[in-house]
Image 1 (tube, each protein chain N blue to C red):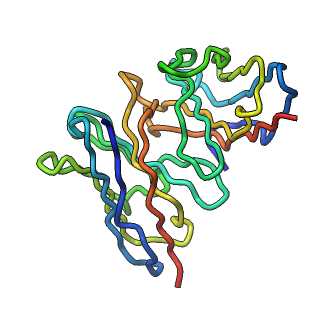
Image 2: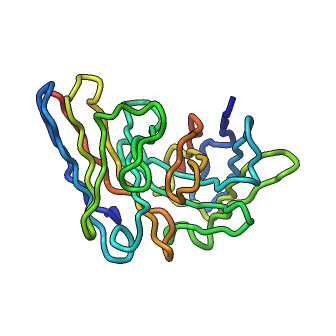
Image 3: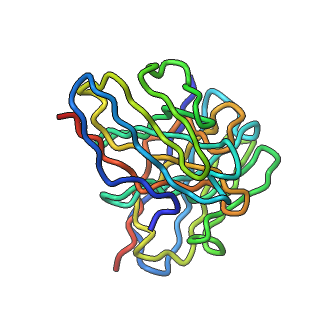
Length: 119
Length: 110
């Protein structure tokens, strides 16, 4: 069964750091595009980052230079390193797997992990 | 402000059809055929309903259909049912900006 399980969320002060993890089962993380998508309380979906099967990455302008997506193939796990956190980064963070060969379609999502940035 | 523009809300009666629009630019929706639509019920994870403008993943009802004209994509739901009441999000690929989402549309089934 294909499954994604996020962890690592929590309460952090502005300017702080967190590392989110997404444990993957049922497929190989390195063989697929993997994304992080966030959703602020009561708001819409907001794409954060993608890592391609070849290892290349792309980040949204709002997090560029602060967040880094990566993966550990040996652990079959996706990560999101978040530095210089701001209150507007408060959200539920989902990891998601690409569907088929479509670059923007995500068919499997984790349940999310909550990040709260507040003093 | 979201990169793609959707109406905040739409409504329809059971059995009717509704259409949700998603407007982008020539650099995203108008530049490729990578438009997706997601359904999200309150407290739930998003579900992929349409990919690559008009394709349905297996298991998605054929009451859901997608199309595109120029810089605007559309999701049509026919034969509205109570369980269709949810938030709907469009997304598009931009070669320079990655994945873009619309602000979401709340569908109310009257």
